[in-house]
Image (cartoon, rainbow, N blue to C red):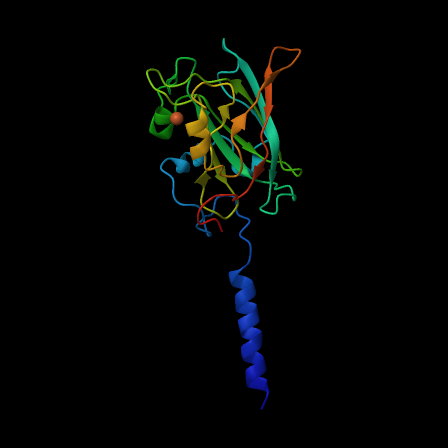
Length: 215
Ligand SMILES: [Fe+2]
C-alpha cells in the first residue's frame, strides 16, 4: 500500500527537477528576468550567431580619429567568484559628436543605436574585451558620455545594466554617483593611457547584482 505515495513523491521530485532545469539555449527566454528594457532586443541583431561570438570585439569606430579605448573585465555569477561563460553582451554608444549616427542605411535598432555597436560572448574564464573610441556626450545636455551595455544570459530575457561612464567626466558628479543603481556593479571607469596611446579600463560584472527581479 506504500506504492502510490512513493510514486507521487517520485513524480513530484522529477517534476521539480525538470521545472528547475537550466535552459542553456543562447536565444531562448524561458526565464523572465530583470525589469524590462526598451531596445534590449537589439542584442539579437548580432551579425554572428551567439554560439560563435568571440569574447573580443572591435567596434566600427576604432579605426577613426579619437581617443582609443580598450575595456576588459570578467563577468561572474551572482556569487561574485565563479566566472560566467557564454554571457552575451551588446554594446553601443554615440560618436565623437555625441550622436547615434548612421553610416550604412541602417534600419530598425541599428538606426536608433547608430553604427557604433558591438557584441561579445564571455569565454570559459568569463573574460570579455572590446575596443572602441571614447564616446562624446550628447550635445547641449548635462548627461555624461556613456556606453550602453545589455546582458543576455542563456535561457533568460536580456536586461540592461549601468552604463559605462568615465570618472573624469564632469557630468559624473555627486548627483550622478548617488543615483547610480550599480546594476551588475559600478560602471564608472578610470582609464589609464598605455604605451600605445590607448586608454585601458577594467570593469568586472556580477550577474544580477542590483538588478530588480533577477532570476
Ligand atoms: Fe545613450
